[in-house]
Image (cartoon, rainbow, N blue to C red; front, side):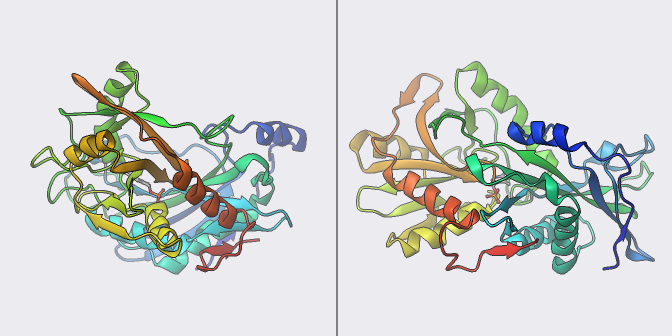
Length: 357
Ligand SMILES: *Cc1c(COP(=O)(O)O)cnc(C)c1O
């Protein structure tokens, strides 16, 4: 891919950048540049460019604004102690975007072009990658939108893929803390044949009201069940779940409608190497409640790029509550193993890290 670069003539000043990186928060500050490439049926992917970060001018009839033909990815760049900058399994994000694109009737962006685009933006805005203290990182957001100006309903004939980046602070300030969960019995996140396995904004739009209900109930996040029987655990809508059993077995839900996280896949490999048997299967809400009550389930955790791994605390539902499992030992061990690989403090025996700079 041929990428042209127009440098930002007014990059954020060094002292202001130092201020931002000292306490970046999440998703509010953006780097000096952005990456864009466009697609049309005739020209294919073309006009790849890095330009100063800034607003887009979109016609009000742009298809994505009306029919939500959109996919996105979420990943991070980590600075190691020697100053080098790395991403974690970027080809897995590229492959997932291809799968999401297939579901959303988008053209496929080749895996190599995806990785090259992400690398090029990180390299351009390298000074925005925070140092490795306190689990800071540069959060990368690749996304694809239907950019055609047309109100007819069909796959867009003009598609735009972009990458933006935003420095991120530690997800947990002051130590890892369990998330409390609200079990929604009213809303589901995905139906059979729906978009549950695709990373697309529509899934998030449909989860907001359930998340609102969770907050109103005094919980941090919402748990979704399958839409057919209302019986099997799916995920949190942004994080996947794991159930650790007393004999060391670990179960993670597999329903066909969850979004398969890259963190989830990595933990399956990591836990296997730590000697745990990992089962991907349907896992019912009764197994959860009974398992916690009997002590058969000793730990529950959720995982995703943002938090890496977080222990799960109480589960609340209309008229009841299941307590947090007793332990978080394995949860914290798996979390540390992943974080150590990402920040270059442990040997990357899986070959997951990709050097950018
Ligand atoms: C992105 C996402 C996850 C977590 O995936 P990671 O690749 O581990 O960050 C889980 N569930 C949903 C719905 C997601 O969109």
